[in-house]
Length: 525
Image (cartoon, rainbow, N blue to C red):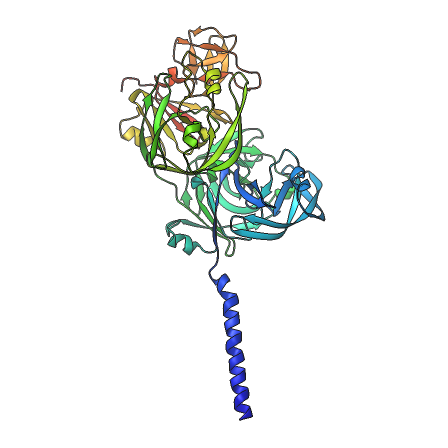
C-alpha cells in the first residue's frame, strides 16, 4: 500500500512538473513578431522611435553593428544610468578612440522591452543609434520599400502572413567585424560586401576603383539573382576591415526587402520588382505638375516637387483632419536663404495611383515660404507637394507634354510602348541632398543646376544675363533660352534650378540606380 501511494505521489508530481514546464515553454513556443515603423532623414538613414524613460526618442538603425546602443552626451545626461567603463571605437579609415559606456535600465522598442542595455556615448553631431538588438538578437525583415522593420522568428511565419513568398532568393551570409557580409558578383569580380544601413550610398574599396571616384557596376548578383545596376563610391578602408571589399548602402536597401535569419545565417531577398504605372498630371496657374493623391479615402491634388527634400507637405487644414503621429519639427529654407520651421507628422498610408507609401513624413505647409520662393507673380499656397524622397523610390518618365508621369523599371518598356523614342541623350547626374544635380553650359559659363519641377522657370545665380544663345547638356545645344537671374544664397553649393519651362518641352526618364537621365530629343513623336 505504501509503495502504491508513493507511485501515485510520484506520478502526480511528474504531471505537475510537466504542467509547469508547459506553462513556461508556451510563451516562447509562439515565437515573436513585432513591426516597427521606419522614417528617413535627409541622408536616407532609417530611423525608428523607441521609448526611453517615458520619452519618445528617434534612433538610427545600424544593422550589423557590434554595439547595442549609442546615445549622445545630451541624451545620456538626462537619464538614469550607471557607468560601465570605456570601449574602443574604430573608424573606417583606421583611427581608434576610447569612449565611455553606460548601463541603461530599460529601453522599449515597440512591444519589445530590453533591460540592462549597454549604451556608448556618441559625438554630438552623430545621431543616436540602435544596433545589435535589431540584428543578432532578433531575426529581421528589412522592408524599407514599405518603411518598416519586422522582428519575426521564422521565415515561414512571414510567408503565412503574405509578407514574403517561396520565390525569394536564398543567400548565405557571414557575421564578421564589418557586420553582415555577402558574396556579390560585380563588374569588379566577386566582392565581400557588408550591409550598412547608415550609409547613403554603396561603397567599394579604393583598390578596385580610384579614390574619390564613383563607378557603375552593370552586374550586381546575389545568390545568382541579377539586380539593377549599382553605382559604387570609392572608399578607403583600414586594414582592420580587410575581410570586406565595401558596403551595400541605402541606395540599394531602400528598394529591396530582405529577411535576415541570424539563427541559420541565411538571408532571403525579394527579387527585383517589375512595375509600370501611368499617373495623369494636370497643370495649374503656376505651371506646376499636379497629381491626385489618396489619403484616408479623400483625394488631394499635390504638386510634384523634385526640388523638395521632404517626402510630403500638406496644408494645415488637411493635416488637422488626418490620423497622424507627431514626428517633430521640420526645418528648411528657400533659395534666398530664409529659414522656416513647421510641425511634421507621420501619415499611416498615402496612395498615388496603385503606388502605396506607408508611414511617411509630411510637414505642415507655410504660405510665407511660397510667397518668398516665387519666381513670378503667382505665389498661391498649394494643397501640398510630393518631394524627392518619395519620387526617387521609382524610376520616373516625366512626359509633361502629354500630361503624364510613368513609373517604370527602365526605359525599354516605354520605348516598346512608343512613349519614348530611340533618339535619347544620356545625361549623368549627381544625387544631391537637395535634388538631381546636372551640369549645364550657357554663354556665361558652366553651372550646376538642380532639376526642379517646383520651379516655374530656369533660374541661375546673379549676375546672369536674362537670355543665353546656347544652353548645352552633355554637349547637346538646346539653343536660345530665357533665364531668370536669381538671388541664390551663398550657402547653397549649386548655381540654380532647371525649371518647368524646359521640362514641359523635353520628356525625360530618370534612372536613379544608374544616376542617369535619358532625355528624349525627338520632340514630334
